[in-house]
Each structure stands twice: as C-alpha cells, then as structure tokens.
Amino acid sequence: MSATPPASSVPGRRRRRPVVLAVVAAIVVAAAVFFVSRLGTESTDDAFIDGNVFRIGAEVAGRIARVHVVDNQDVAAGDAIAEIDPAEFEAAVDGARAAVALARARLREAEVQVTLVEAETAAGVTRAAAGVQAAEARLAQSDADLAASRAEAHRTTADRDRYQQLSDRAVSPQRRDAIEEAATSAEAALRAVEQRIAWATADLAAARADTATAEAHRKQVDTAQAAVERCRAEVAGAEASLRGAELRLAHTKFVAPAAGRVTRKAVLVGTYVDEGQTVASVVAKDVWVVANFKETQLGAVRPGLSVLVHVDAFGVALRAHVDSIQAGTGARFSLLPPENATGNYVKVVQRVPVKIVFDEPAERDRWSLVPGMSVVPVVTTR
Image (cartoon, rainbow, N blue to C red; front, top):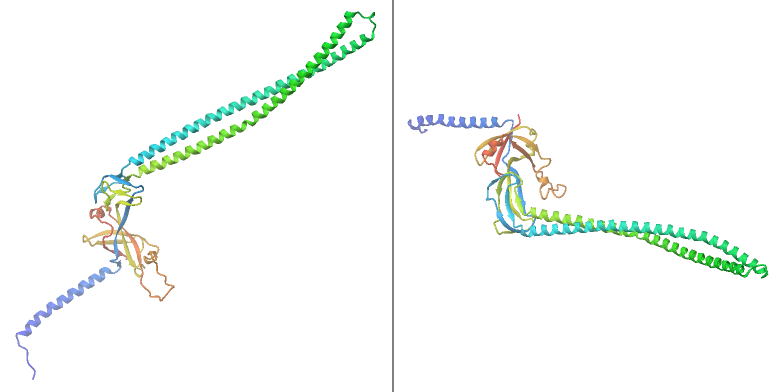
C-alpha cells in the first residue's frame, strides 16, 4: 500500500513548476537571441590593438645634456626629445671647416700656378720661335754675303794674278800695291763672312734647341693641371668630411618622428648613451586592430565589411571596417616556420591576421586606445 504525500506539499510543487519553466524559457530565448544575433557574423577573441611604435635610437655616442620630455607626454612631429652634449661634435665641425678652407686655398694656388706655367711656357715657345726665325735670317744674310765675298775675292785674286804677269814698266808700283791690297781685303772679308756663317749656324742650332726645350716645358702645364685635379679631390674629400661632421652634430638632437605619446623614456641628464641605444619610443595616435581569425572563418570575410570592435578595457563597441587580409598565416611568418615535409604531420587550423581600421578617429582617440589592448571584433558578413 503506497504512501500518500501530504496534501500541503503538492500545492508547493505546483507553484514552483511555473517558475522553473519560466527560467528555462528565458534561458532558451536568450540563447536563441544570441545565436540568431551571431548568424552572418564572424568574431574572434584573438585580437588586439596595434599601431606604429617609433623607437628613437642614438646614432652617435655621448652624454645626455638635456631632456625635454617626461614619460607619457604628448608630442608633435619634430618636437625635441633630448640632446647629447654637442661640444665635441661642434669642435669636429670646426676642424672639418678649417680643412675645407685649407683645401680650397691650395686649389686656388694650384690654379694660379697653372696660369703662370701656361703663360711662361707660351712666352718661352714664342721667344724660341722668334730666335729661330732671327737665326735663320742671319744665316740667310750670311749666305748671301758669302756669295758676294767669294765673287769679290775671286775678282781681286784674278786681277792680282794678271797684274803680276805684267812688267814693272807696264804697271806702276802704286797700282800694283792697290791691287794686292784689294785682293788681301777681299780674302779677309771672305773669311769674316765664313766666320759669321759659322756663328749663324751655331745660333740657329741653339735657337732650335731652345724651341725643343720650350716645347718640353709644356709638360709642366700637364703636371700643374694634375696638381689642380689632386687639389680638387682634396677639396671634395674635405667637404665630405665636413658633411659627415655636420651630420653627426645633427644626430646629437633627438626629435619626435611623428605625433604621438612618449613611452619608455630611458635617459636622464648625465646619462651616457652608446650608438644604437634606444633613448625613448613614440607611440603614434593612429592605431588599428589586428584580428587573428581561423582560416575556416575567412570564407565570407573580405575588405570593406563593417566591424563592431568590443574593447575589453572600457566595455565599449566602436565601429570599424575590414581593411586588408594578410597574404599568409601567422605561423608562416614566425621565427621558425613549420616544415610539414619532415616528421609526422598533424593538421592544425591556422590563423590569418586581418587588419581592421576604425571608422571614427575622434571616437577612437577619445578612448585612448594603445597597442596591446585586447578587443573582440565582430565582422558582419551578411
């Protein structure tokens, strides 16, 4: 015989049953609404804020003389961040400028020397040519005088020989002496002309030698021109050294490469920095979302689709759109990409980075989004 439950407990159970049914119905409706709302969308929690981070590194070594910013300070492009003591680099610039001035002075001196050598060489060649012409003229005149002297000597000698054959009664002693004197004078004149010809020939040879020497001096012009080219090369080298010194001096000042916020300031006044050491970083204001979707989710994802980005830090949702899809999975661009051709192969669903850009920059900046924040993007694919 079965026991009959107390009458008082049956109504209580009947009263709780509608409540349970209502709760179950609410859960079912909420789940239905959630799943219906997710139809035609793709989302992932493997997403974060990304942006441009400019690392400002020292290109010269030195001691920090001034720091113009503090941590997390907003800066504009070109604002001063810090400065290295420029005294050593200014001295190097002054030395380089002095070297340039000296090299240019040497160049001017070499150019003047070229002008002088060219003028002297031209004058020497002209003088030598004139000397040759004068010597040739004297030799020609001497040749003409030689012919006349020979004729005169031949005539007077013939007269003397003819008068010597005559008797003393036919020719007076005075006439005979005159003829003898004329013959002697003609022979002396002939010998003088011959001597002048010898001298003129020697002068012509000397003048031609001077011409050859003057022509040889033209090589001094080439040597002077070579000195000019060498000085020009020295000027170019000194100017290059000056530009290098000025560039190193300019590198003593660190400026913001873009507008943003100073982060990880790593120097103080008096700190010594080496080449390549990071002084500070500047995080640009322009940020975006990198969402790593599974490859099985990308069938309907394409550039231009609208996205609702849920920011975990602030609990807000910002409107955005798909900008682009990376041409390769994240694993393919890792430090050690997988080599599926070796060992045992286990298929793993890969993730592909998708860049998502905010539609409202002002709203994005209002929430001070920074690289590294976690977000959940929901892409509308309908």
